[in-house]
Image 1 (cartoon, rainbow, N blue to C red):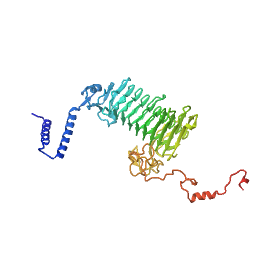
Image 2: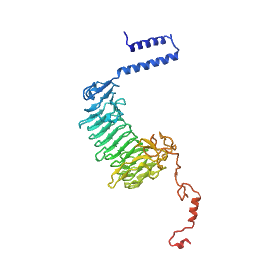
Image 3: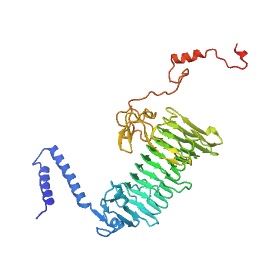
Image 4: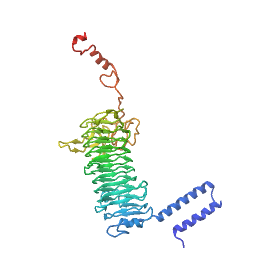
Length: 483
């Protein structure tokens, strides 16, 4: 006697035989039916082979430890970890499995589902060319030397909605590996938040990492895309030696520079807000090769040092730093500075769209009398609509930020909500769904005309009046020369 699924397969088999013998249906219908049959068979086999293995530290499930579940799992199995403290170290051993907490979307569940390394080693290890189907999701990784270790050029797991906290070295330490790290908190690790990753890092909060030693940072030595992350209050640099792209990042309140480049020869920084860092906004150190950095659509303000600092005492290489469509304002010691023997090797170019104005944040951060930075809230003020993080609603301000619709006209508008001026905003939220709204594009003065005496970007009768009012003025000393 056959079961229900077996009867279904027998019926499909007979119909397929009839089709192949030409007894039923036209050719196009036959092809569609065969395709449906093949897809249904694949789905049937996948459902039949994938399993869910449940882990409970109290022993009331399939397994008591996560590693024993990994060792028993087959590819595409899901290992469901119930809340509890699991004092162990785990290694994926190349398995294409998903290890996840019971509710990755609930921060309380993530915080209470813990793998604890007892102060030694790497708590989670990927070192057998694990790919994107090796997934760690919705757990807290803590109290190891490194929280997560990723090793090998073909190692690229997915780490999502996790907390990687309180490890004695790095939160996530990579060697040649390119994990995808998203929606993850990397916090209070003693040296570096994430080191040497070649993969994409997105929607992460990277804060409070480092202990003040040279090289400590939120991110150090990474090469991939950093997208829509908050890199804040790290006890060192915010981002150090990044060789890739940084977009839509808020880099604030770090106890050294916002970004530091030493022996890294290029980086693109787009739509970032770099504010309130203890040293300079962006710090450049010698590279052995000619360097080129592009900073665009960004806001670099209120840092305790320079906006841009270059230290290059001996290395005879050329530096080019292009600053375009960017607001540079209110940095304690000026826009740029540094120490270099040959000024000709340094070229910081303030190009099109550069401005120096108060960006009018929703709430400006500030330095107190002890030079401690107090964080602000860095959405841009708008009369039409600004996303308010306190109420999680759109609100209206009494004034508009000058950074609305001020980005590169060639930059994509992204997900900016309507109404907008058809042009991306400056800063970390420009091009995103939480960008402040605007009523239309503001005219932009590319450069002042030569006879524009009142600097309104046009030459008219007002300028003529200014010119004629000073006609025949002469300031020679002695005045007799003027006669």
